[in-house]
Picture 1 (tube, rainbow, N blue to C red):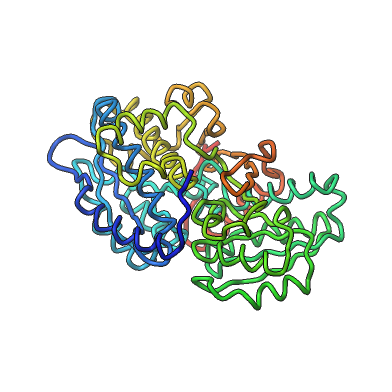
Picture 2: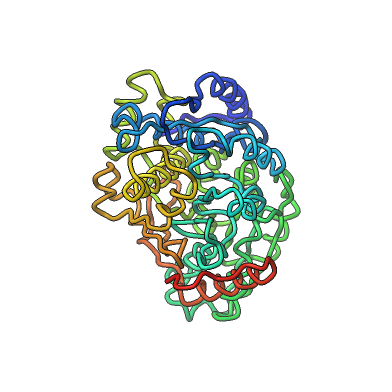
Length: 443
């Protein structure tokens, strides 16, 4: 459970964490070791979100080294580069780190949709796979065109369709959506605009009215937006926000007495960093997610024992299990399991990006494997194929009680019949514009 803190306090912690991380970062040496660049943002306007993500990454890699001696006996090494969530700086970080390590970068986790978009054309040239887990360009789920990009376990378009399914369930059936009003309050960026095509397509299919409301970076000025919400009187409001935008939106929604149980955020708008600063105003607010909250698994116990118990934690022990720490940890685990899969084919040595790309495309994080790694019941199985780099992962809705996040729905499968054709059409368009030929025999 996170300790209540103000946004300014979090920013102060971000600065301290940023300077601490430099001294504690593990760097690749001459020994045989997997190397993973970490593009982090421990400073800047999104630091309260970036810090737990980075710490979750590092704590998991540290766990592998401390408990297991690495991945199948080969150590994991990494180096942080501070992006401040700035696309230009993120690309510079990538260029700085991509050739380090005994076999070069195994893969890259941009942790920014803007940076991901910029790295997509570089990936096939540098032969470094991109794992944009639950963010980035949704069309990249079509592996026939996007050979080097993976967005498993699910995408923004799938999440948008799951939101509509959830609303339909709450309203008494999908047929009840006709005539309903749904507002989307979104970060005015490539990231924030990602769900719009899906929500528009589904509005035509189900007959609901959709109102789009952009919020400019960083999102501290939203009074005009919520005055429009008050006039529009939507039955449901979705939020595709990030950073301070989320907590401001929660306060503004409370100020106009908008019902919190009808307010649902994307999985990047459903974290302790969003709800704790909003205080009681956030109680009842909902958000999508693709993994459990809290520190209740065997893996978490191992992190306490082998990482924090040995004084090697990346951050505060009390923040292990926060939503974004868990997401960083899960991202690191998927990265490590892709490397492990590649080692099964190419041998027990440091993996190159090209080898890890194969490992990612053949990843099968089954229910039994999740239990083996200590994450039984934490997230649904993740299976990637040549054609499907998303894995068709389901989404679940969680709700903030004022003290913790609680699941309030079953796992919701995306509307595959709507989303997948859209993905394939977008991927084909991208491929044609960039002279990319779809891979043959990619099923």
